[in-house]
Image (cartoon, rainbow, N blue to C red; front, side, top):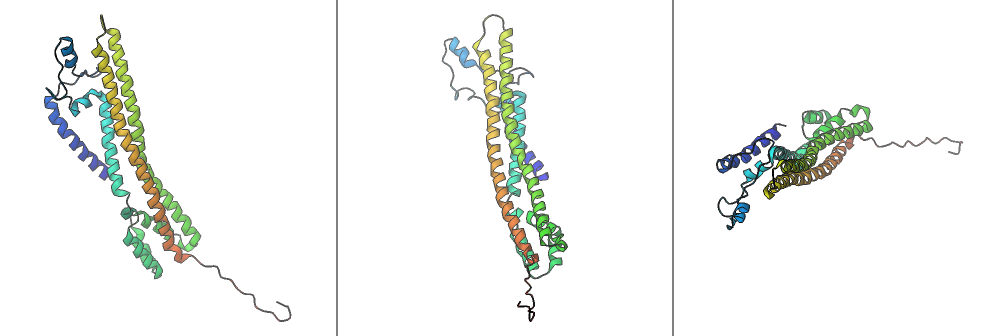
Length: 278
């Protein structure tokens, strides 16, 4: 959790730094509840018979901060979700690695201690181990007095518990993807609703720029929602598949390390008794 908070703060600082400089040359934001109208000087120039300016002339088109402002409150919420999703993705990329879940030195050291019948030393070694394989083996060694089957059952329960915790954390990426998509649709509905409301209250003829402004805001929020949702779904699937693969390998390694406690069945031959024919 601390790693996520630090990552989110870093990403916020990176995003807000260019935005602060962009605000100096940006027009004032529209009041709350109003649709932020884009610069329609091109249409006015056409009506006056003048040649419209291209995107590269004059102000050079819209800045990223102006486009975010056009999205309104919904756009700010989507940006916040993107920052949160970025932090979760970075934290998951650091934590969901074979070196973190199944450290090679831990596996080799515990396996060597168990092979040498130094069970107490093995228990002490994994007692405070924070890795997945160390946690699973520690839960299994606690049940060693109850037999190998009890150890396997304890390790399976521990593996399911630790896997569920990791999957629940990655599930936040799936939630962010779904919420961002829905927020984009919400921005579309709000933009169109506000647009038609202004048209209904307009006196005289309806200006085309009033319709264009509402559609512009609707498209901005939809695009912003999809930009956040698509990478979130990708990283969610990526980390989920990585968890399944590494956890399965680590669970098999834990069971292999504890096979020294498995007792082979002993076949006892019946003594020969004279005169019985057996």
